Length: 162
Image (cartoon, rainbow, N blue to C red; front, side, top):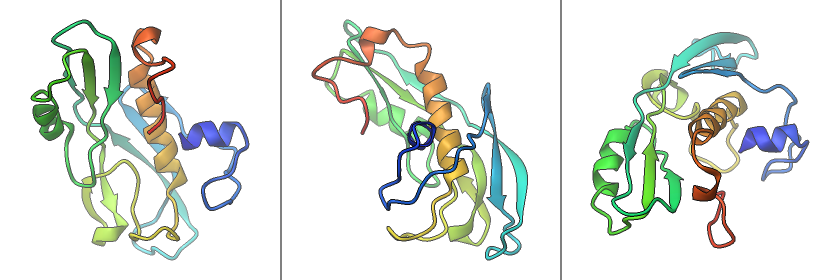
């Protein structure tokens, strides 16, 4: 989503202008350009790191496929744990795509690696955003959805962004 904001020159929820650079996605590997050097979290130095996304679990609809939802897990979790739960829901026409975030150093945990869609430095609305990580994850989700039939994602009754 941030990538869409950035490409359209829109502002984030805090009103800061988004940069023009977009991180690239190649298959299941994403390069995060500009991740902070975790040895010096206050530094403006950057380094390039490649993170591989984990396994994507898909819960196929039991009925006619009418909608597709990409379910993103929380910090330190996996797509597999959610796919097991989503499989039990009485929603037979929904296809659930449950990707697993890459394992990456997380500043919130002192650089300890965990699955995360982007780096989290602090839990605060005013905390810094990892724009490169957000962009890379948005691109990964867009890549997952690119194979979906158009009528399974967009309709007048289906929210397209959540």
